[in-house]
Amino acid sequence: MKFEVINERDNRPLFRKEISFRIDHQGATTPSRADILGRIVAEYDADVSRVVIRKLETKFGIGITEGTARIYDTPEHMKRVELPHIIKKHESKKKEGE
Image: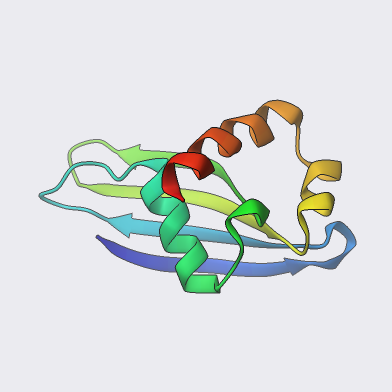
């Protein structure tokens, strides 16, 4: 699995870093959200409780997944901005990935 950051932007008013990425997984299965979350946490040396994966889009037949993620300065900032169902979705994934 090759992880490549396409675009990275600091969004200071919302206390977060926004990244767009591409994962090349040709010849392998599509990576899970937990795998991608772990890769982002490792790449940015971030705490798993501050990272949200917003979008994942797999290109059928070519083994490429593109997505966006947000890395917040603190979990409190994340809870103020993100919708409750998004936070809940990531809480269950974080428990599996820890």
